[in-house]
Length: 226
Image (cartoon, rainbow, N blue to C red):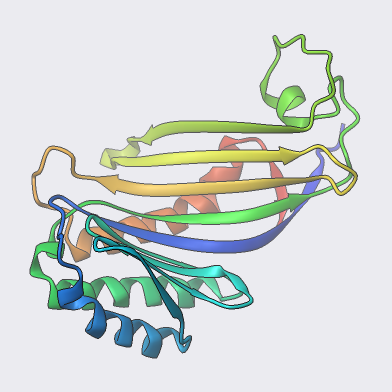
């Protein structure tokens, strides 16, 4: 039987950089950092101070753009942007943060997340759900299914590489049927070897590109039109 082909539409991309030790005074660096982000992205944003250790920056009428800056991390998210531009922005923002806050030069965790919508005709299997029919075999739930979510956390340790990957699939069981897929590839330094520097982050982003393009859809047995 011919394999079903799905349409893939990017929603947003997210890059996250997390510290080993919190910086409880983000006010010291936020002005210079925010000015740089605005200049780099070309997007002036509104800053919302949640408390002394957390600020969230957004743009009206752009739900996919967000800067989350807190005592433990810096997160940059954007949509409606070419992926290569996003990645270059993210690495430049990290480099700027490290230049004005030296303790960010060695991170606890860094990664990049892609979010997509996957569309096709509504499923016609046993449960009218691809998550049930593709990935779950022993459920006997007869009630109407509204939404299903699948989360899988796994390690990539082939060829001497060591990355952590999170896969999320959300399935909306409604007339306008769709999947939402999120693939998060990150590198961890939980044992404080202090080797997760800018170069390692760049390597992580490059590996994430390779894995997404060459291996990921084979791993989850999904044929997509990109």
